[in-house]
Length: 137
Image 1: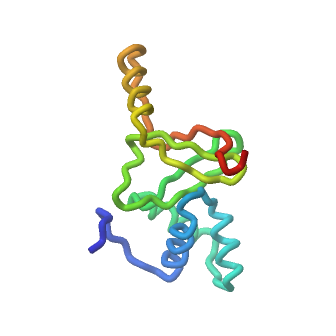
Image 2 (image 1 turned 90 degrees about the vertical axis):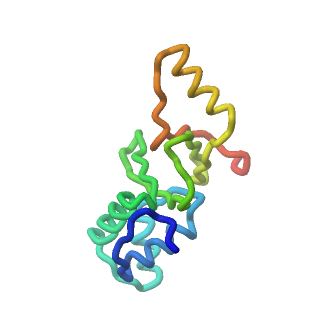
């Protein structure tokens, strides 16, 4: 049984792209990363197909899509079927690219503080705080 809400047609390109994303689910990847990987496997998929597939996977809620503020580059991360990323903030290591989900009580306290004390509703979807992880220090 598929845990995703929506079903989408499967193509070979989609299959290869999804496999790559699942294998790299702890980091964000760009369309260029995916294209290079497919080329290394001698799989020919044009750039438009990759972007179309990524957009469909985002629409099907199978991927998270982030636009990096500095260079406006878009990166993607595979989303586990049962995980809701609208309820927590993300942290990303600027050295290794690992993206982690902050699902701790502390973040709930911050959200509540912002709402109560400042009348500000924090929108966690697509949020990323950048820093250096413990493995890269």
